[in-house]
Length: 145
Image 1 (cartoon, rainbow, N blue to C red):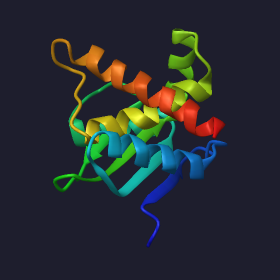
Image 2 (image 1 turned 30 degrees about the vertical axis):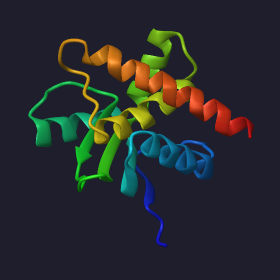
Image 3 (image 1 turned 180 degrees about the vertical axis):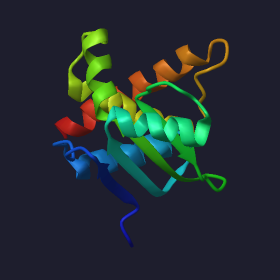
Image 4 (image 1 turned 90 degrees about the vertical axis):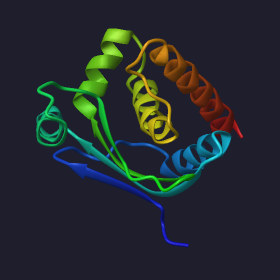
């Protein structure tokens, strides 16, 4: 089977992560939401690039940590996710958490969006955070096994 995951960069170095573990984790989170992982592309970039993507495709004029482009087909998760490593680092400092923890949260945040979980409406942010926390706990379990 072809590799369903692409880990790409634009203007930054690829983060030092265990990508095999990440892929098993993403698969497990998708299964917990009754989804199947299709082709997922993660594009790590800097603030300048994510601002450009935000302006070009969403008509938003601000920095963000992740932009998720949903190309799902029913239960099959497909999409492209741009992640600004600079914003992740800034948010980690603000939240007083490690950079690695914040990066994992953002990586799974995009998958949760593809699973149909939103975070903009009333009460949705709390639901997203609960799902992120559950996914991070699963990552801890997988990383110890």
